[in-house]
Image 1 (cartoon, rainbow, N blue to C red):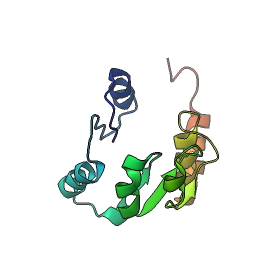
Image 2: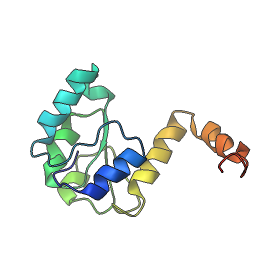
Image 3: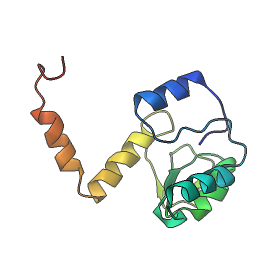
Image 4: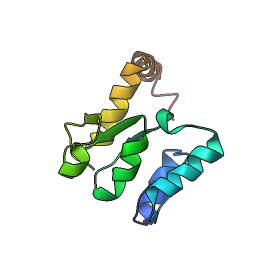
Length: 122
């Protein structure tokens, strides 16, 4: 969810096969509420990383709230976890790795990529 609109963001979301890439969102709580209802999820099942004041409503509702190191202080004060890296500099990557390790899925993922040969990727 982002308040901005960008073709680059849309393209990157498609490239990464991101299921939900919503841009130009004015009310993030309302937009995420729609997604939750459509998918049959609960707020407690959602992990969300935000960096600015317009993320506060969502961050207060989700099961796991995260922020990059350069998030607004008001955001940092209300989250469960703060990355050591800034937004756009690896914060999301750091968070994803932490979640995968907590789920016990990291080693399997590393092994998957170790087992790939260069011929398979051609």
